[in-house]
Every structure is written in C-alpha cells, then in structure tokens.
Length: 346
Image (cartoon, rainbow, N blue to C red; front, side, top):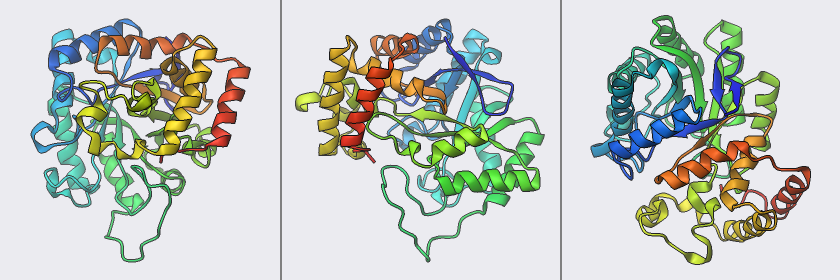
C-alpha cells in the first residue's frame, strides 16, 4: 500500500480508502466485516462513512453503515489502527434533525454524539460537512445559478466556531469538506487562517474519467494550500467498470436496483466516453476498472481514492489498482479522449 499525508497533519492515510456506503443496504454486516478485514490486511488504514449512510438514503437504514463499522471495531479491537472519517448531512433529509440548515453548534453536537455512539468510539479522526447548506452546484449540477432569495444558511465563521468546540473537546481531530466549490473551499481556508479556527485538511468531491471538474478550479487550491482530494465515485457508480456497456444491466447492480437515484451518470456523451476509455484500456492490457482507478491514484492533488464494492472480487481489483502505474503515453491518450469529450458526467 502507498500512503500520503492528510493535509498539513502528521497522519499517514492509505492511497486507497475503503468507502462503506453499501454496508447496510447492498451488503450485510457479515459482508461488511469481510470487506473491512480484507482491506485492513492489504494495508488500507482509512475508512470513510457518513451519518446518512447506507445509500440510497432512507429513514429506515440511516446510520446503519456506522453501526456496522462500530460493531467491527468492537469485534476486532482495531479502532486505533484505522483513520476514521465520517460526515454530517447538509439540508435535505427530513428524518435527520428536521432536514433544515444543519450546521449549527447544537446540531453538530447531536450529529457527532450520534456518530460516536454508532461507531463505538470516543473520537472521529476526520469530520466532514457532507454538502453545503447554501444554494450552489453539487450532486450533478453543472452550472451555478445565483439565487438572491435563497434560504438562510449558517455563515462559515459560525460553522468553524462550532467545529472548534468539538475539536477542543477531543471528539473530532480534523475537519474536511465534501461536495464543495472553489468559493466555499477558499472561504473556509481564508476564515480559518484569519481567526485561528480549525483548518480544513481535505475535500471529498467526485472525481473520475467522466468527471474531472476538480481539475478546473479546485485542484489549484488543493495544490497551493496542501489540502488534498478524497475522490469519491472513482468508477462513476460502476460505469467505468464497463459493466453497463451496450445497455447491459447486471442483476443486483446499483443502477439496476436504484436506477432513479443515479441519473447523473446516464448522459449519452458519457456512454461514448466509456467506450473510448474501454478500448484504450484493452489496447494496453488493462481492464477499464484498473485504468480508471490508476488514473485517479496518479493525480498530484490526490490524498486518497475512495473505492467501494459489493463483491469481494470487485474489492480485490479496486485495491489492487494501487500497484498499477500508467505511463505517459496512456496518460496522453486519456487526456485526448477527455479533450474531445470533457466532463460528460456532471
């Protein structure tokens, strides 16, 4: 396994992070345990979850993933060997604290205590804001449309002040953002520096061969400020495994089970790009999965690549991508495909 520093901290996290959102929905607790055992044995020391998981989010399964991880910690006694990341929901799910603006100190306290209890731990290494409260473009929105009448949201200074309280209490060690934009990213860094408040150490945004939007504005901030990307959806919900090519729909696949939840990955341009990438991988003796993940692993602003799997076969291939190095010729051809069809998936 390869390791990188988590932002400006002295924490070494594995280049491959185990994403866990399937646990409690597509994967049982026993299957989740098997995945965590295997990942740990392969050197993965970084697990990512969220209070809203499993996915797709439902009131009946909310918190189930954290509970499974907590039970694994209890069984294996390996909590101290894992860098644990979880996330607090933004506005939306009505069954979580009413669904409104969540990033108040009171709601942070409720969220953190809930996660700590389910995870059976006294502290969270990386606590992330799952998505912004303000009106902006995330979760498949390409363009930003300013709304002068948007709902009131908690200002960034008050959010950081609230998070500082829980850092000081030792309940969380570091903070991160997720589904964030260049404006939000830069403002969090600016305000934390100006007021000596907790500094963001990571951003968890989508990044894959079909969505390289992070390259445009976020990557410069990441590089200059030493705040790396935790890439989620590196296989574009499986489209970059090739399993949905030619309109195939494998039984029990995510898209097959929850087609209406993953609509942002069904762009026609994306299908054409997948075909081009598939052929390039084949020409170079790689599977599309291997090439797609190896590309994400290679990005200079990458801290960790959050992989997810429903089967052990998928998990083994995903983790194995850490050993694949793409040469300059393949990278050049990837970039040419991208230039001809940039970011077909929002």
